[in-house]
Amino acid sequence: MRCSATPDSFTPSDPASLYIGLMSGTSLDGVDGVLLDSPLAGGTPQVRAHAARPFPEGLRAEFLALNTAGADELHRGALASLQLVELYSAVVADLLQSTGLKASAVRAIGAHGQTVRHRPDLGYTVQLGAPALLAERCGIAVVADFRSRDVAAGGQGAPLVPAFHRAVFAQPGADVAVLNLGGFANLSLLFADGRTLGFDTGPGNALLDHWAQRHIGQAFDEGGAWAAGGVVLPELLRALLADPFFARVAPKSTGRDDFHPAWLERHLARLPEPPAPQDVQATLSALTASSVAQALLRAMPQVAQLVICGGGARNADSLRRLQATLPGVACQTSDALGIPADQVEAAAFAWLARQTLLGLPGNLPAVTGAAGPRILGAIYPA
Ligand SMILES: Nc1ncnc2c1ncn2[C@@H]1O[C@H](COP(=O)(O)OP(=O)(O)OP(=O)(O)O)[C@@H](O)[C@H]1O
Ligand SMILES: CC(=O)N[C@H]1[C@@H]2OC[C@@H](O2)[C@@H](O)[C@@H]1O[C@H](C)C(=O)O
Image (cartoon, rainbow, N blue to C red; front, side, top):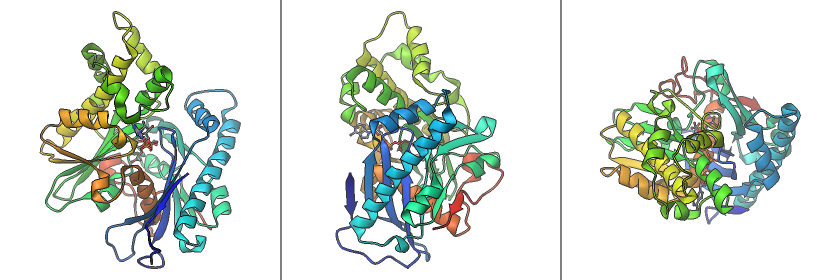
């Protein structure tokens, strides 16, 4: 368990301003939770506490397996959802304990759930979880299933974080881009004139994690040190970047349905000889950086600032490659702007739960392509 809170006990901005956000993302590393203080009167939302718990290995493996067709999926998915709630409840308990708050002080929990399929092209997206059980366990209202309403309105259901990125990272008079480097990567473009755009750019860490697990037996490449010692294979990089997803115009979103180990294997099999695994890791890292840079420069050529969040912000090799592909852009992690990189997504889902309870839209139609703004999610009362 990792847990931190603001050092002194705090008084919330107003009695209805505290929300918890729980994020278990596509990299399948575990659950991040934050307590967000987002005053009714407005003002920039503040993270007051953070807690994180890793997935037990069995649950991680089961969620990974549930990303592809398999036997008895409904039963297995239901059981995995119940296990996820155990982890979610533990993170909520950690947050309450570290802040000394009672459950009744928290207005709602925004629980993302675990994405196991994402097919907006077919009209659905699936985030596993058991929100009724979470509400029962915690005694706090839960908002869940954030993406389906946007998909029902013809949208991609993702990315949903751009509106929150605008609330916390926009700077008056500046064009700012925000990159979430999770299992997959997405950009938010915060234009100085008030417009916000955003889309998924492709793989973030998911393929890097897969390759590191397979060849060095580690869940991820710590600091990107292994990738940094490899040599980028230009022919492979060109072939990977030729995937039609990268050229598609937004709105667009992606996930393990599109970029998976078999996709990589198909490309590797076409090389004249088997590459050194470390060079493949370097090439995958270059793929993330190049796909982000290409998409960013196409959509916001004048960009001068890039804020990086998500666990990939802890990968020095990824940061170095991003900076090298974007020489004119000042790249910094979100830590420098007040929200540590691994807390931003959880904070976004706390904020989205707040939007829902206040009867406000959470999606941005210009981002997702939905027919209009929609109040997202389903509410499970305390
Ligand atoms: N110290 C580190 N060195 C290198 N990589 C790291 C480090 N810490 C985290 N990561 C990377 O970040 C990933 C986790 O990122 P994060 O939690 O933001 O993803 P996620 O929320 O699961 O994904 P998504 O945003 O796609 O839903 C890990 O799987 C790993 O690849
Ligand atoms: C379907 C799904 O879970 N998508 C995630 C995933 O992880 C990154 C990228 O792909 C993004 O589109 C989205 O998450 C972020 C938090 C979002 O919705 O903004």
